[in-house]
Image (cartoon, rainbow, N blue to C red; front, side, top):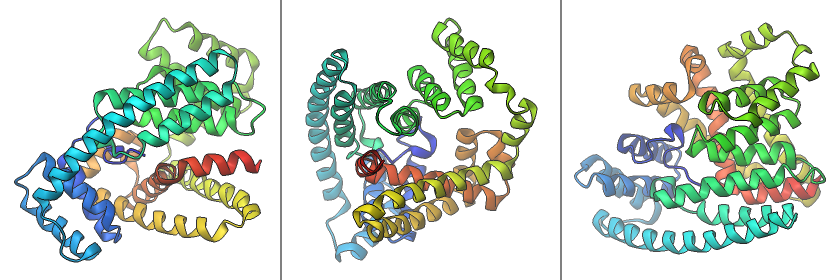
Amino acid sequence: RPRAARAWGLEPLNVKALFRRGCAWSFAEDWAHAIQDFNLVLELEPGSDAARRELEKAQEMRHGPGPSPATAKASLLVNSEEQLEEVVADCEDSKAKGTRLFMEGKYHAAYEVWRRAIEALGEFPQAEFTAEAQKLFVALCNNSAQALLQCPEVEGATTRLAMDMTNRALELEPSNIKALFRRGCAYANSEKWYLARRDFEHVLELEPGNEAAREEIEKLEASGVLKSRDEEDAKQDLSDPAVVTKMAQKEADRFKREILAQADGHGGVPKWCQRFNKTQVQAAAWARHQVADAEGLQDLITLRGPVFAEMEQQQKEEFITACEFMNEMRAQYGGEIDELLGKGR
């Protein structure tokens, strides 16, 4: 799953960001990811002595004395570019195959084809994505969401799974209209009426002539569901840093419980607990590092908005840890999670 620029999606080649996250990986003793980030820094800024030192340290901790940064950089560049080109070509074929299945009304089969293509592209860090690869990844996520919205017979398809696919597209393109609209539909299916309306309104801000979004808002207003809770209170809640922090933590806890509930029937609880613990440590280390760094914090504020800016330092760390934990779990184990939750219900 793309990782290198998740915190500030539109700057995937931010050298400072990559270096800081490499340090966070080192702090968490995840040497493989640290080496990957420091190699990318040297790729973008060959004269960075700090990155060279950190890379050598991470290599020594992982394998003992390793290859020189120049050798590692050259190998990474050549191999990654060639492999990415091959995977993009294969995934374009998968996209076309999925489209044919979708047009035949075989929505879940189309989703499975697209999901596998997403997993294949997800093996590459976001910093290595070409414009073609990014466009394809976003299209596959959007297509998958559309297919899932047509599968009410599959538990969670029209809600949680569709939401996850749109979020993955929005991580790369925060203003992608298709992703926003389809996430709004998934929110509505989940009875998260205010969040649904917010996405539909965002679509109209970006594309005022979008009749589909306008119709969805009219449906919500006509149904009366938005009156089931005082709107001003709802808005006030979402502007409260403490409430937003707790919401993120509760969502992360729900995410864990849901996976463990299904894993219990397959004897996989110990495996998932181990994964949770490792990812939690990484997410917390990364959050602490970013919040403590002035430039990193400003990047997060730009991405997360005014409510995040008003949070106390501890709240910021807790909020980012919860979000990063879920993102990283989906990045590393998304296919397994989808299969586990899809089959377990």
